[in-house]
Amino acid sequence: MTLTTNAGPAAIKADYMAMIQRKRLYSGVLLVVFFVLLAAGFNVADRRNAGGFWDGLHKIFDFPAELLGEAVAKAPALPGHLLHYLPAMVETINIAAVSTLIGAIAAIALSLLSTRGLARWPRLIPVFRRIMDTMRALPEIVIALVLIFILGGGPVPAMIAIAFHTAGALGKLFSEVNENADLKPVEGLASVGASWLQRMWLGVLPQVMPNYLSYALLRFEINVRASAILGFVGAGGIGAELRVAIGWGTGRYDAAAAIFLLLFLTIVAIDQVSSHYRNRLVRGS
Image (cartoon, rainbow, N blue to C red; front, side):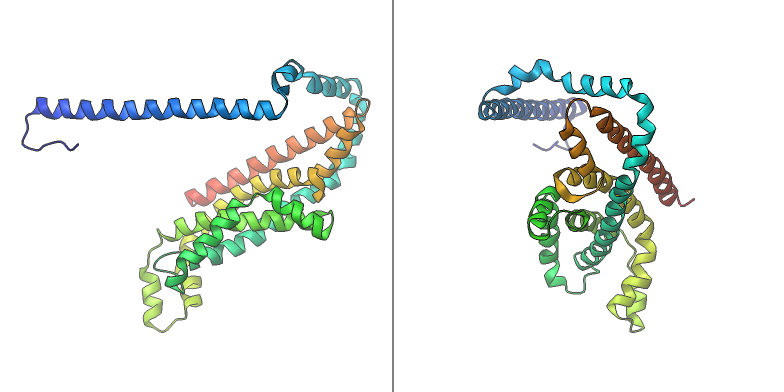
């Protein structure tokens, strides 16, 4: 329903309030439907889990309490554990850094090929966009498990899996940045006979590179966490050490606590450093 321009202020206000009420009603109905579907999905999942959620709910804090208890009791051994697992943490950071670099390079190419007004082959824009959609849709852990089956355990499957997903995720963000680029430099370069690659390198990338770097740093933070998770399923790094430490069970939880602490401190440090440089890039200072 549209507001009529020739109606009086009272009629316009009444129409506007009616429109707002309908919008709130629709939002309320959608919210109720969402919660109904959420409750139904939880019940299905709980039944498939043999109803174990409610039975085990009271034990939710047992493992953290046992882990912290052993960590406090064996606090003098904590520094030694941190030094012992530091190389694995460095390996995790290396996996995240290399996969972010490879994924970002692939994302730049995909984003330029899928942006209207910049694409080398405009008719293939939907193809490149569907490629990025597919890369984003496949979870890293699924790709890593397939690659571990083919290549065996180690950091290489994790690196390939994270780089593959990163290319799709960053490609989508980079293409949105490209759409806001000024096309006048590109048109000027085209008028003097510059190739497509030269137009992108000299006319587009200098404009969008600060935003590219900002998004890449943000993705690096995410990839550090992802590489730690993939290590838990056999892809190397600190995650693999955490799986072994937890598998030792009671009596060795102090090592698991040290890994949790090392992972937490590393992620916080990376978050702070990358946030600082992202802010500098966005503000141009």
